[in-house]
Length: 239
Length: 261
Image (cartoon, rainbow over all chains, first blue to last red):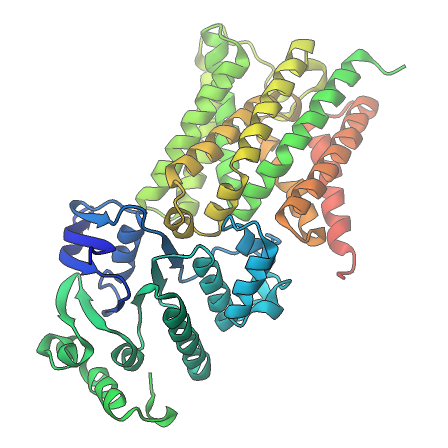
């Protein structure tokens, strides 16, 4: 199958700093790929380049013709003075039919938030609304930038469960930046480990045995593998 | 009978207040008050240069204000200084350069107080027509691109991911703002153009349930401020710009003091 997005020899420089270099990977339809890496590894830069907000310094990012992109930002620049309710926010995607917007909100467990001000949403509610907005465009590829940052354990679990259901129903491909190593290892088809370049990538089992992965994440890496193999309950999650 | 001078100023002022509403809301939502200041202050240099080269004032102001707005937009993206500092530097240096240029350039004879603070007597019949045309252009552009402007306000990444253009957004925002500065300069004065944008929008915010409702309420408050302010200016012989802004400030204070629903 032809890839949805093909990243070739990508490098991004800002002034003298090299934010990314030698990035090569393809995303194929139906795949769930997670991007992990320490702070400052260039995860957000890579996402911004894939979306098209910043141009590659060298290399290229090719999209399959007619690719529909869904995207959930890490956060919105919501000024308190901007009166914006959830339904209106969804309508800003261009979806004019109110029934379709409601159906998608319902699918994302957010229908009761319909008339809530965006500034009043909790972190978990905001992520479900952002997911509804991304999915309403019927995307081929969903790009999620740290969707569970700031969520508590149960909010995180709830979000990933929802994401799994939506993936199963729509067959959308997912490319996700994540800090939650245990979830990444459990839920992804493929993991890309980034630290300005791709340190290692492959199936979760493969990556979890890669020395560079352990170098990057140290003790947390072991914990994540432990989580993965025994699918332990909440009491093991310290991060 | 209402005097022809006052009538012209009223018509011009009402049109300006209507154009200020959507732009002012965008400025408030994007936290770009200082940006409005920099663009507004650049108008002074525009006036001085236009006089010196005997060009129409509005043309000079549009060119300089647009140049300033674009420069600031790209300068703030470079990220060497905090946004706040860059905007402060541009805003105040634009004012200072304009004042010095007005003193140094040949053939410049301008009434500094009127240029800085506005004078309703300076609005000519021709100005009213220009203001109406300019405002119509602002409305048309903002109307066509409204959804995309709101999306860009919420998240640049979201706008681009959904197929929008960030460059187009920046151009639309900066150029309509420059046009607005040129339209409102004579009546409101260079110093208080940002106030004309921000105050009605900020006053409207507690009452609004949607972005469009906020624009409509800001327009109503702006129009009422213009009418009240010009009446004050006419009766008490105060400068037009500050008079309008004083009335708008009253609206802001009263509407914020009301109990929230």
